[in-house]
Amino acid sequence: MANTFNALFNRVAVTTGAVVAATSFAAPAALAQDTLINIAGSSTVFPITSAMAEEFFTAEGIPVVVNSTGTGGGFSLFCSDNVAERTAISNASRPIKDSEAEKCEGNEIGFIEIPVAYDALTVVVDKENNVVTDLSIEQLARLFDSAFEDEATTWADLDPTWPAVAIDLAAPGTDSGTFDYFVEAVLEDFEGVEVTVEETRATFTGTGESRQPALASEDDNALVNAVAGAPGDSDITHALGYFGFSYFAANEARLNAVSIEGVAPSRANVENGTYTPFSREIYIYVSTTALERPEVQEFVQFYLDNLTTIVPEVDYVNLPQSLLDAGQTTLDEAIAALDEGE
Image 1 (cartoon, rainbow, N blue to C red):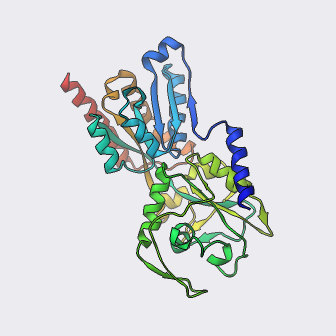
Image 2 (cartoon, rainbow, N blue to C red):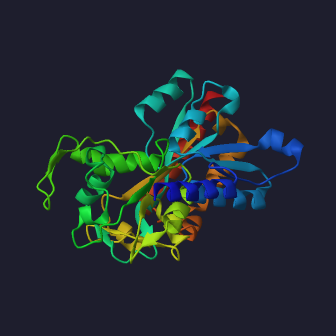
Image 3 (cartoon, rainbow, N blue to C red):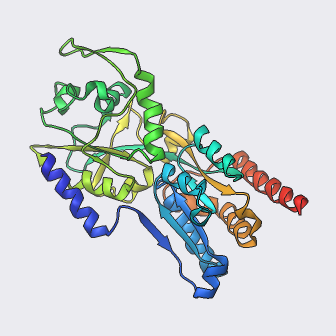
């Protein structure tokens, strides 16, 4: 089964041309050299920012390139030692880590953090899988914690009423902010915790670290295709994965979302606070050096002005007005500080 699963991913990679996704809206070469805005980072935030880039180019004729590298990969570019490869904006599905902020500080890169939407991290199985409809946090920990690598290998290991069919896991790579968020929200709570499996009475102590999945990728479309395309046995298929809600919504005809502790991922459940712990804020980080450029100021303002329209269009959830206002204040204060420094 693993060979079939890996071959499937190889076909996906060849078909898409690259694991790193990118969108750009081209302009004449002279204009692009002067005004090009480079953005990289989270695949989760990618649909929002790429939609903003398209609308901004249509409205203003200013080119924007958006690369999906994963949150960690985005911050590596944003804070890079190499000035030529630094990005103006970094998409992030988690807050910046202390080590990343220290790297920016060491390179004299200031930044502002602006929340842009809520996401519902979504656990998915193949559309043909009508058995696995709900999982507990403990079952997820058993699936992904490295301590259970040889224990939770089939669906029956998680629930004896489910078929004894092997599970292949598809998960974000370690550069992904979604990976970091999942580890923190699920696995770290089981670090050092002794868990007894009811059916076998075997005891395991959680490590708080993820096992190696059959497929790890910062490209959410690769994860979608791997789960949706995995062949199945009987009435249940092999693969399970997780990523941002937008990628599930765009592929709902091919995937089933799994409820967590009885609560389904949905806009309503994010808004009412019941979809925990997988409701999360997602962000853009803006370099204050880049913000000195008028076109970057214009793009970020355009971004904020259009959040309530674009966010639901790409299947994320709007922030409350208080957080939207706070983001605008953050931008206004950063621009005012730049003006005072002139």
